[in-house]
Amino acid sequence: MQGAGMRLVTVAQSAAVCLLAWYVGTVGYLAYNQDRMLFPAPAGRVSAIPDGIEPVVLTTADGIRTRAYFSDAGGQAPAILFFHGNGVNADHGFQRAAQYRTAGYSVLLAEYRGYGGSAGKPSAKALKADGLAAHDWLAARTGAPVFVAGHSLGTGIAVHVAAKRPVRAVFLEAPYSSIADVAQARFPFVPVRLLLANSIAPVDEIGDLTMPIMIIHGVEDETIPIRFGRALFDAAPRDRTIAREIRRAGHNDLAAFGGYEMALEFFDGVRGGG
Image 1 (cartoon, helix red, strand yellow):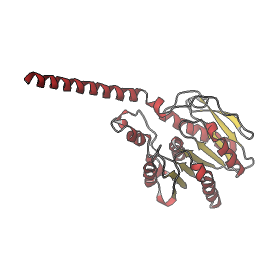
Image 2 (cartoon, rainbow, N blue to C red; image 1 turned 90 degrees about the horizontal axis):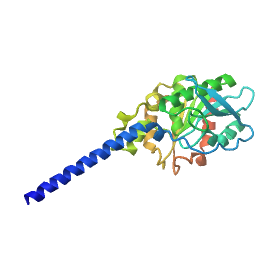
Image 3 (cartoon, rainbow, N blue to C red; image 1 turned 180 degrees about the vertical axis):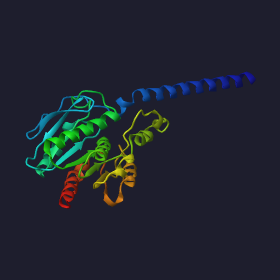
Image 4 (cartoon, rainbow, N blue to C red; image 1 turned 90 degrees about the vertical axis):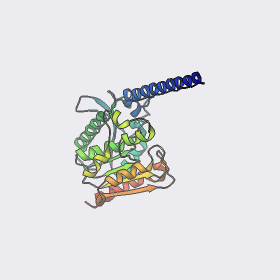
C-alpha cells in the first residue's frame, strides 16, 4: 500500500509539472505572438475599386506608407474619417463610403500598416500612429471639419484620434473598453494585462473628449459583448454622449439595423447644431 501511495504521489507530481510546463509554454506563446494574434491582417486581393473611390498613399510620422481610399464629395463638404475593424481591410468600407458621399460627406477609409497592401507590421502603438496620419492627411486634403467613426477595433483608434486632434464628433460601432479587457475575457487563465506590451484602451481617453459622441452596440454581439461597450459609455462624458443598444443585432450586422443611417443622422445633427 505504501508503494502504491508513493506511485500516486509521483504521478500527481508529474502531472503538475506537465500542467505547469503547458501553462508556461502557452503564456509564452501568447506573449511572443500577441501582435499577430491581436491584429490578424487578412490575406487576399483588394476588392475592385468602384467609381468615386480614389486610392491614396499616406506616410506616417515614422515613415511607414499605408494605403487608404478617398471619396470626394466636392466643394467644402465635411469629411468622415472611418477606421475599420479586425479581420477586414479598408476596402470593406466601399459601400459605406458611397452612402456617406451621397449624403454630402467626403470620406477617407483609413488603412492600418500590414493590412490591405500597406507596409509595416501592426501593433497597438503603430495603429495609433496610422490613425493620426490619416486624420492629418484628410484635414489637409479637404480643409473641412473632420468627423471620426470606427467599428470594432477601429473604435479605439477613433477615440485616440479624437483625443489628439480637433474633430467635430465621434461615432463608435461595437466599441470596447480596452483590448486588454476583451482579451482577458477570452483567456481568463492568462495574465493578459501583464503580457501586453501596449494596448489600445479607449476607456482611458474617452473621458477627455470635448466633442459629441455616439455609441451603438448590438445586444447579441458575441465578438465584443455589449458589456464592454457599456463600460466605455460609463467612462464617457455624460453631457455629450449618446448610446443606443440595438436589439437582435450582433457584431458585424449593425448596418442591417440602420447603422449607416444612425451615423449620418448623428453627424447631420452636430452640423446643424453648429
